[in-house]
Length: 296
Image 1 (cartoon, one colour):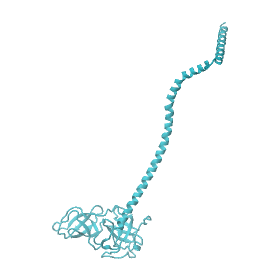
Image 2 (cartoon, rainbow, N blue to C red):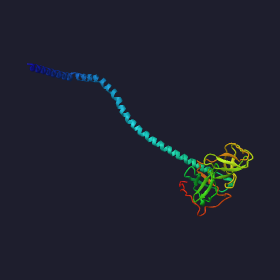
Image 3 (cartoon, rainbow, N blue to C red):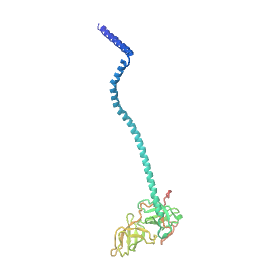
């Protein structure tokens, strides 16, 4: 009995919906202007339009975020590429600056007028000693260029040292900072003479054995002659000093040359020291010379 009632209700509902649908379609076809279907569609659109707008508001930032991530990845790659380019350009700038400095130093050394207008050859320092205690430099000029043992070596600032060994195309220069070097000098302000001694590092030591006058800070010290060409600037007195009774005058001299930065020098091949001994004789110990720098 209950099954019959449920079937009767379902059938009645179905028939009713069918009739309503038929009437709606008939009225929609016959009506002039907008039909009920259009009205229902419009109503549905009006109903869901706020929902669509809300969904758009919610999804737009998400889409923008995803696009932003893609753009950030692209910008990161571009920034890295630009950083590499900047590093490359900075390296090129440093190379150009280095070449410019070398060119300026070469121009200065070539413009140097040696004392007494003696003949000189320009040389490039291509190697230093094996340790900080080796106060030597190797130059790319040798006996084929007229360089012999004993020649004075200078740069645009003053006295560098003297040649103490020669090969055909290279030579070794011993700096005046070497403790085994002694340089006869003169104080241009007092005309007193003395000897400059190397101390390895720091200032040079000046000894005047018969000084009658004190020497003042800033006095210019030049070579006297003998082992070195005369008239070459050695440095300036670092502090005022005077001789004590029974003792020689001792002072410190700041060298004119920055030995850590010399690159080009001139060898005074037109002047020979008084104790000139000539080239190294067969059987003498021969130091090993490094290969010259090919870029010079």
